[in-house]
Amino acid sequence: MQTSTREEEVLSLQKQLSRQTPTVAITERIKALKHLRSVILNNLDRIEQALFEDLHKSREESYMSETGIVLSEISYQLRHLKRWSRKKRVPSSLSLFPSKAYRVPQAYGVVLIVSPWNYPLQLSLLPLVGALAAGNRVLLNPSPQSPATTLLLQELINNNFSADLVYCLGGTIDETNRTIEQKPDYIFFTGSPTTAKLIMSKIADKLIPSTLELGGKSPVIVDEDADLSVSVKRIALGKFINCGQTCIAPDYLFVHSSLKQRFIELFKDFVSKEFGDNPLQSPFYGRIINSRHFDRLSLLIEQDKVIFGGETIREQNYISPTLIDNPAFDSPIMSEEIFGPLLPIIDFDTIDSVLGYLRLQERPLALYYFGSKNKEIINKTTSGGCCINDTIMHIVPHSLPFGGVGGSGCGAYHGKASFDTFTHYKSLLVSHKHIDLPFKYPPYGKHSYSLFRRLMR
View 1: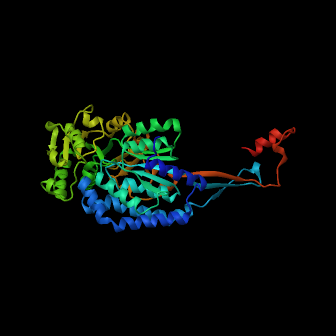
View 2: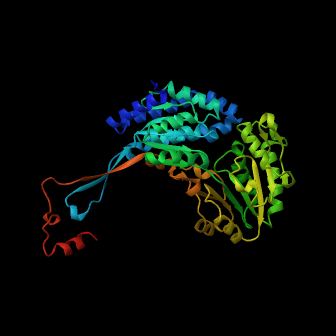
């Protein structure tokens, strides 16, 4: 007789409880979020050490890009979830007078969160915060490719929370597959389009609703009237934070031909200022997650086109900040998401030529523009998010949903969007039990049709 696994037991328990009480009580949600905040704050040193082991992140970068974002999200959800959780009265129809209509926020039930390795803490806990705030029970499955952080998450979650509310798996693909077979009520996936397709193929016949946070090739455009001093530092920050292993990192760069040489000079100077002449020695420059990804990135470097950087050390999974000059559009580096510290730079003469190229590509998770043609860029391009005169910072405001479009994902979260993503808004109509307009029922009179037309416009 086949014995059940731990994740099957937990999922069964969570589903049983969610059927009895679909939405966790607000008092319990608030308690859980406050406790999660305390657990994080009490283990900051251990979190920073795990992120350093996995990705060589400095404590400053760890807090800025991982822990601090999660803590800020917890505070935001706590400030608003009582108001968001109230049923909201909405207009009913005159034809149903004197009925009352409401939208009732209700949890989906049991949510499976599958998170990636590149921001292993943030991209695990940020959706967890939204799912808990909305009243769900959660199975969390972080990535095995960031083993130190995944092991720590398992300990922190499973030692501090009841498994009937949230439970952290070990990060394996088998655990994800077995959990999907048990049919959770919602799946939130962050990762590559390739893995997303596999998950979608598994959940299609089960009709499990899902959110997919993917990636893609996010372009940057530096137009002829851009402020180069601003452009250079903001592009460099967006590209080289986490050693380029960011789903919204600038993937390739269009620079107006009149600015290209000056841009390259300023870019080199700024990167040297950030990380020194030898980034290998910098405490603020990360590493590639593992040798497999190192080998993949190394194959993308065409040494004859390198105009800055290009150094690699396999034993340390180190690749220096690298500029690659005018690669062919059909080359591998322009065909797949880079996800590393390599930045192709391509010169252009007219913005129309850039827009023409972008229209032929998959719609990106983010698009970045430096210059004054703001309306043209906003109105003539489609992307999950967009920054004018900046990169990656659109993830900071709680008021801006974060998500992709088309091949870069579906659905969004952060702030109120997180609460909405993990919430089913049940439509509720309350009709008067005594007052009942008779014209709804057959046999219809000679004026019924004209009355319907007046009432139901």
